[in-house]
Image 1: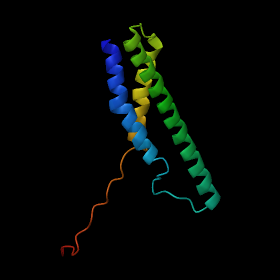
Image 2: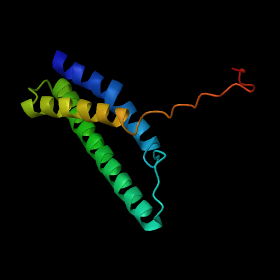
Image 3: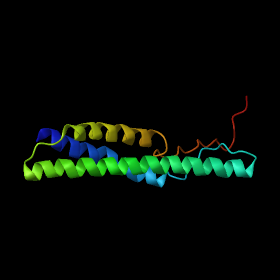
Image 4: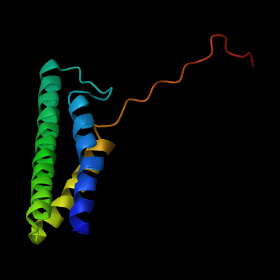
Length: 118
């Protein structure tokens, strides 16, 4: 029962916020753009498609882990061993999302109004 509670806490504390932050940053891009308009569109479509598939995988794994763990606690059944593997995979993908496109943009440092004379 402790393992199930740890899995539920991990999914709710790490995977669900990563899913929400990843959905916000789905279409955000870095500052690199191509001069060719079609290449820019193709790269944007591939980027958004990859991110969307990652978020769908994260959501599906989170749902499977939550349903299995809660069901095992409520019905007092033994949870399948593959759910523990799904839980670890879910946490790894959540960390991937947070570190890539789920992070907040850093604000640029403002320069002083009057630079010091050298």
